[in-house]
Length: 466
Image (cartoon, rainbow, N blue to C red; front, top):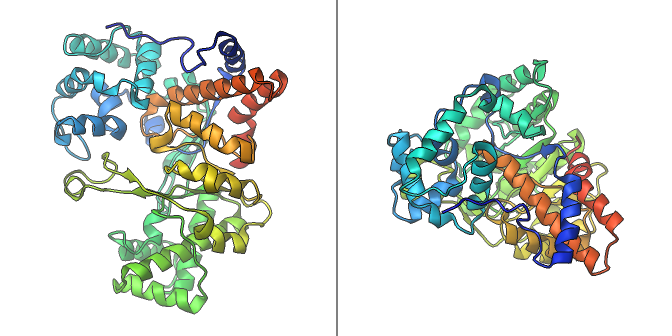
């Protein structure tokens, strides 16, 4: 079958509304990409080594892809998931190509089609008959200098790219990139402290001990623990970080006095902690992270609502981020109130709320962001960064909070080649949504053009303090 990339993809079917969407999209299509949250390894750009093969590029590291193949009966070991070596890369690619039909209508299928067509001039769909020739076509391109990571980074028009980093990372790759005059774009670290704030994460006590040793604070002392976290945040800021990211299971916050919090910390280090106590410790630390952001200026992003590593067997075999994280119902108004009572009105505090429970967009997130100056609405993320879900998101939040309480689009990806496809998708969908408002007489075309540009450019710059 032909692999087709419709120039009017994602635009409305009505001819007049489609024409308006085309014009709005044209105004933003070539603007630089600002990517303030993602999971690309900065060493990819520092080392600038050629991508090894199509399987590594498109399949092994993309759990959006591997999870659907696994659901169809392919063992993750045969896809090279986690730390497994996997099979021969061509064999992995063949398994994918034979099941290309599984991705029809999915966000992954959309992004992959975009990459195949725009980067590799592929015009036939993968299947068992075309698998080898497509593998060879991609491999031939990857051998060229203009397909190395840095060349593609500039070809994609990426101006800012944020990574996600362990608090004890020395950020050497970021330092080297920032000092390289041949690499003018910004690659920013992001402080991700989850494993140092959650006593139920395996290895919590050992991580906290390493944190204290690195910062020279007293081991086992709660005040020293807080001081060490603040010191690491300052280190990240000095190396260009603008945000701290929190991937919590629930956005629960609770205020505890120093004695209560210190007692819980002691129990956490000893391993003598039940689920209720662990929840209280996490909730208090999320509140304290907001307090730290109100002081040091790091934007606080909260990515809650995911049951991580749902399959214990899969986790034991392959580790985390291998496709078995599942969305949960998530509530914000009651859970965040202690934090918002404490710092919600603090000047220059920016907190971006994300969700994979789209019922919360209109019920809680948009109303909260429509009042608290510190709160901004995060873009559809993970299971929701898909065409229909993005349109539902716009409808859910705009009538309550407008366009300017959002934070812009994030790609949240480990799949480097999907970055332009994801941002282009968001720009097309926003153009389509705005075109409908124009045709319905709800927004002028001039105002729609300004909004479309701001969603791509000025909003992420403002919210992420860029």
